[in-house]
Image 1 (spheres, one colour):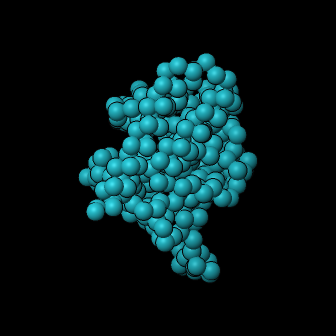
Image 2 (cartoon, one colour):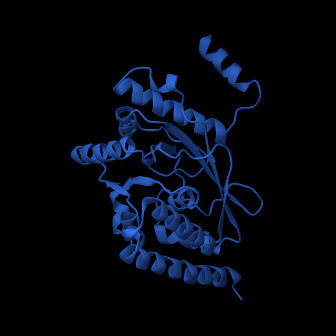
Image 3 (cartoon, helix red, strand yellow):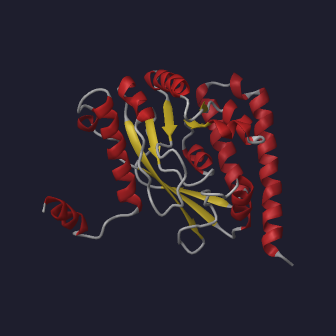
Length: 267
């Protein structure tokens, strides 16, 4: 018997039940609940959906800020579920996700801000909305890399949407995400890069014996990090600082290597 096929089919059935339950909740009670109850419902739903998919979540490090801009690295379509299973956020995501069956509808009802990449006016609109939410004490998450990586690198963080934190004068918190298999090694099943389709990635995750998502909220950037200046230089400084913090967490340099690298640059 093909146990990978049996495992994947059983988990797909469980995920389908969770998605349908989420749709019913989104169509009926979600919008009528208080913000705290909405977050609680989304958190519970995300946890059960991940469990159905065979994904366990471990959160270490600092607590996720209650209000502010969160800047995680981006590895998989699972990232939103992983973060929401700990502390739900309003996400800024690419517009294509809205067309995904069930998932796109649920993201929309959960308050995701969709952005059409390449349209300057669309970016401006999302930036204004994100700024308003941050000023009102909301928590917004932006995948500043702009695309997923295979988990072996951290791509450059783009600064455009970080401008929302500058305008709202709010906390910015880097967030490191990584995925491990049952042996504690980097999971390749979650990869969602290149020509890999969502269906292919979903199948690999469901067929994998064990997947563990590790979420590491890092120290919020200090007032000095946020007060260098205003405008372009400030948002770029924030993006670079967040990117460096995430990279150092996921791929720490050996003892002494950082000093050696600085010495090479100086010389």
